Length: 88
Image 1 (spheres, rainbow, N blue to C red):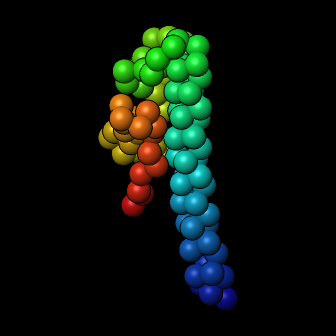
Image 2 (image 1 turned 30 degrees about the horizontal axis):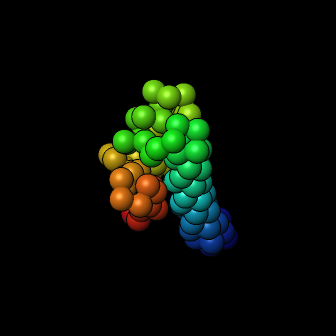
C-alpha cells in the first residue's frame, strides 16, 4: 500500500516543484522587464545591460534562474526586453 501511495504522490510533488520554479523564473523575467521600462522613463534611455539596473539601484542584483542555469536572463538591446527561456 505504501508503495502505491508513493507512486502517486512523488510524481505530483516533482511536477509541483518544477511548476513553481518555472513560475518563479517567469516572474523574474517580468520583474526585470518592469525595471527596464522604469529605467527608460527615469533615465531617458535604455540600459546598456542588466548590470546597469544594479549600478543605478533599480535592482539589488540580477536574479538567477531557480533551475540554476549559467546565464538565464538575456537582455536584448534591440527589443529592450528580457525573454523567457526554456527549462529542463
